[in-house]
Length: 195
Ligand SMILES: [Fe+2]
Ligand SMILES: [Fe+2]
View (cartoon, rainbow, N blue to C red):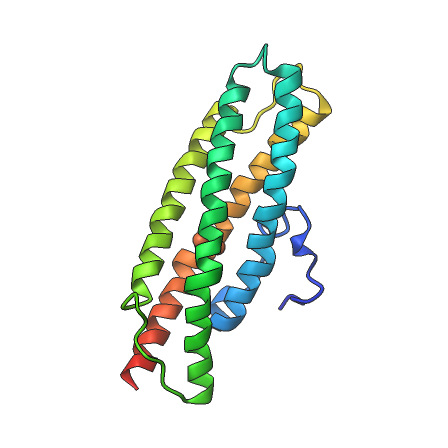
């Protein structure tokens, strides 16, 4: 298991994508911490880096590569929506999941939340994942699957590498939440609320 305190995964690398962790064995508390400290941190840092690279590349190549302005505005939209999405997870969904996990360890009771069930915010998050995925598919198409043109500078190439990395990280991040965390949290809630 990774060291969450000194995790190097917060660096902007594709380490997340190459991960071979057996996430299914992790409890909900550990999973939420891991997702925040690796994927959420990665997204926040990568957005700043990609926006700076995009501005530089649009300045140099915008006149000859019209797709760049569309990529810039699409990425801005993706960033805004993702930052809001991360906030909802960090402030609403994940704290509730951690509370359920704590109740399981302490054998205590948890009152039904104001949103009724963990299924409700989980479903909202899954819809937002789908929207982000669709926007990234559009971005991938616009950049010919992140293939830089022949006349691309090093900065241009780095931009497409970073966008590809962002896309790959999103797939792992969404898989962890949709397929592992949410089903585990739903099962945990059924157990706790029934007790
Ligand atoms: Fe997330
Ligand atoms: Fe999410």
